[in-house]
Every structure is written in structure tokens, then in C-alpha cells.
Image (tube, rainbow, N blue to C red):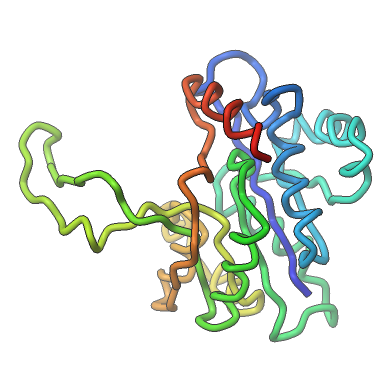
Length: 233
């Protein structure tokens, strides 16, 4: 089985306004619908869960029901206060006694990356099967500097060895949940993405092909770019 956990638990305050950013529309289609479609239509995912804020569970269902290809095809569940809380709730949604096997895979993805392609999803799954864990990533095109005080450059890492991490991030399900369920409260606070869960116990996380078009919609300035990208999706 291949499970997909789409994380949409945030309120998106950096976008301004009252509506969480995952519900904003890109050329008439809500971001959440675009992202859900990517996993429902990729052809390899058996079960999908969407983690959303408690106050938006019914709203999310209403949004998905406006589109026949997403209506009643996904589990809408309450997300948590932190990313690890949402990850754990999604995993427990899938993790039913006697229903999982060592070969099962879980894909985790940020809802506000609506331009993930089937090729990226497949590449992530293939890498996870080989290495145990994988994250989509793209080579860094910018020079990155390190500054501990935000004023003076202290070092400049070799750009040829730097990558920008994206999602999907994909793992062998049982290995991932064994680690996730074992984390202490302090360890959970240090988790910035799903791959950090695996790396926290020394597990390998491979790089799979991401894409510059796999943008994370975070700020109002991202909307015009997303509208342009949507013309190709």
C-alpha cells in the first residue's frame, strides 16, 4: 500500500486575510484541490489523508465536494498544532492493526505545493523503496552564505553541494512510524520537516528529483507566479 499524507494544518498568516492560504484560489481552483488532485490522479496512491485545522474540517469537505474528481475520495482529518502532530495523526489514520506491511510507503507533502507532478511523486517513492527515505530537492542556484549574527558573512559553502529541499518526502511506513512515535517532546520541537524525523535516528534520506515549478505558496507575491504556472497544469 502507498499512503499519502497532505499537510494543510497551518493558518497561513503570512498571506494576510482571514482565509488560510491552502484555500485561496489559483485561476478559480483552490490550492487544496489542485494538490489533492495531484495525488488522486497520479495512479499509485491507495489512500490519502488531508490534515487541516479543526475549525476548517467541514469547510474543507465542502470545498472538495464542489469538484467531482475530489468529492468523497479523501480522508479529511484534524491536523495538530505542530508538523509532527499532524504527521502522527495522519500515520495513525493509516496505521490499523493487521493492515500494514513492511513494504508499505507513506508520502508526506505540503498542501501549499500544488504543482507537484506525477513524476516527482513516483521518483520519491522509488527512492524511498531503495533507501528507506527520500525527499524531493533541487540544486541550489543561489550562492548561500552563513552568518551567525545576520550582519557579517562568516563562510560560503560550496554551492555545487547545496540543495533546496522540497516535498514530497517519502518513507517506508513502518520504519517512519516507529521513529515518529518514539520521539520525545523536545525532539518533536526540533523537527522542521518529515525527513528530520528519519535523520534524527541516523536513517538515510536520499534525494529525489524536485522541480523549480514545485513552489511553496507562502507570500502574496507567490500568487501571480502560481497563476502563470497553473496554465501548464
